[in-house]
Image 1: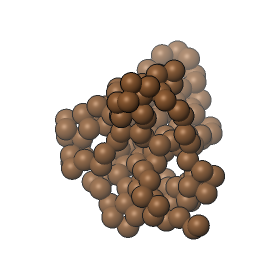
Image 2 (image 1 turned 90 degrees about the vertical axis):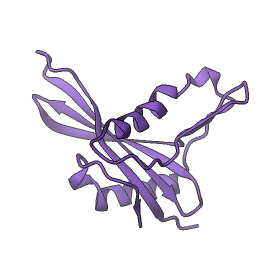
Image 3 (image 1 turned 180 degrees about the vertical axis):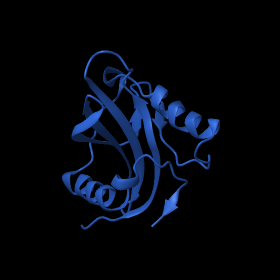
Image 4 (image 1 turned 45 degrees about the vertical axis):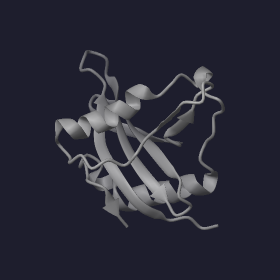
Length: 140
């Protein structure tokens, strides 16, 4: 099955390394995508820095949904908070901070290679150059 992105929300850079004398650091960007199969996938895009310059990048994909062993479900939901507002930051960090340790999850599932490929290609084509710009929900 060929997947396509149907909507996304980009939060931009949400976490950065602290400035110190260490020449190495990171910038962490998050985006969430709904794919044509109905699944929501998060992308954590990491810029690896040396002396403030990006030297490499990493892509980490996941389903922003976890079922705990207790039966409780924690999941990301596309919210209507507008970029550059406290609500926008809260929307992301409410989900981020609620993520449970893996040991508390019933099972760990990962996106398929096909889903990852779809998200990576879409991100590189449509978001990468403006990854710092947080967005509303964008329907594709």
